Image (cartoon, rainbow, N blue to C red):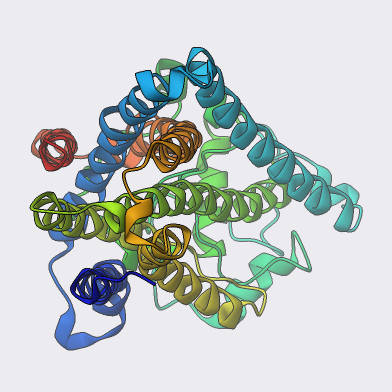
Length: 428
């Protein structure tokens, strides 16, 4: 170990501080959702979600991308290797790898839902169109956009489900792919299938835009979507010429849940790699730079922890008996984020066991190579997660935000910009 006991003690203290800050920051959104005395206004979650998107964006482009180019193009490393010429290729390969992993995994999930369900009967396979009469026996005809009351009997909801899909869950939540958008009681939104790929102007022409969402949606509102609402929404859309079956829409919701989980895992992996890198850097930093770097890392973990924690807290609950699994998944993701940076510090201490190893030519080349490659890989992951899963998911593909009041859309954009600026300032 290090001959300087004080040096090792400072690293151990840093491990404890960073672990506590990371754990509190990442778990607070979930705890505030579960514990009554910790509940905070919905508007705070709304701001925090978009602020966190800006934090991840800034981390990917301002920190990781720049760090990877600087490390791999350092004159000391270039004297030994020309890997710096391929920095952009490493970033691109990382981004495409994550894209392929997500695409293959979600396509596989989609096929499982497609082939695993029983063949629909002629009645259930018949699309609901404006010219197709809707029987009053299995379902109730909705002629006007009258919302279903929350006090509807359980037998009515069960009857609605069984008339279309016998194996469908009784409660279904809808949400935007890659975002934490929630469903509304009177209009369940689906962002998969043709809805996700058609033009906004085309999509807008057949959706009612008369109402405004008055409350800032937060993770708690994920609990509001029910199958009866979906049936009601599909019948209303039949008046606009849609030809969807309820069974296919329910499958889209199930696949969408899996896609949101995959998106969180991609984001978590990119953040964890980045945390290991800064942990390694902190472990070998000496002198007065150590204190300033420690403060910067604390703020870094605080911002990223809150951002990731809000996304984890917004993961959809399972309707097929997997509630315990989802609780374990949330807890695991939180703990993994909290321990990753301290693990990076420990790795740095073990890799450079002797104090004189730090600063030597050989150790400097190794550190630059490791830091540059890992930063490039992490940059590609976070660039994909931030732009596709978060930025596009929260703004481009979220009709709930489109239909919100102007002040709420402005607040979302301002929060996004504030997150970008705050994280950019941390590294200066």
